[in-house]
Image 1 (cartoon, rainbow, N blue to C red):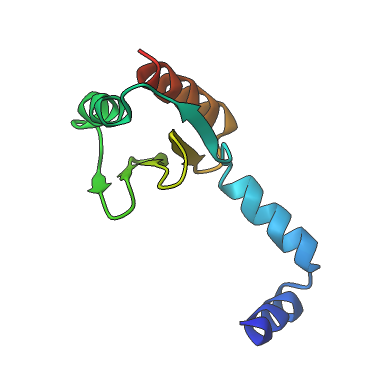
Image 2 (cartoon, helix red, strand yellow):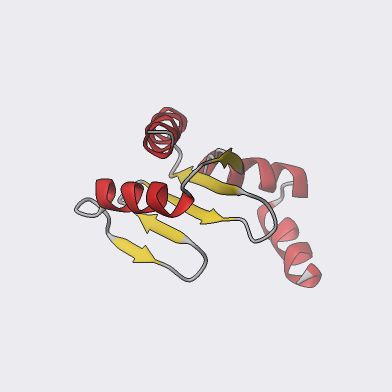
Length: 110
């Protein structure tokens, strides 16, 4: 992988830091948000039901992942702690990522 990274740096004429910054700006993320919930399974089911019609793809390989036109999230229960972990990403739209994160947290905490 490092040879591919070195090649990309040479081809783009940017530093590795600049390339990483550009990718992070293209896909803003919430970072992992941990929430302690009394009934994690019920909360995850509530989130899935809320977004079921809007989702373009659903994957249950590692918790619940749902993808939409311009954003996606992953929500999973921890195997080692009594928490659920939430990650939200968008395609270059920080306000959308922040709004969807607030919506998801509100659904989890109902």
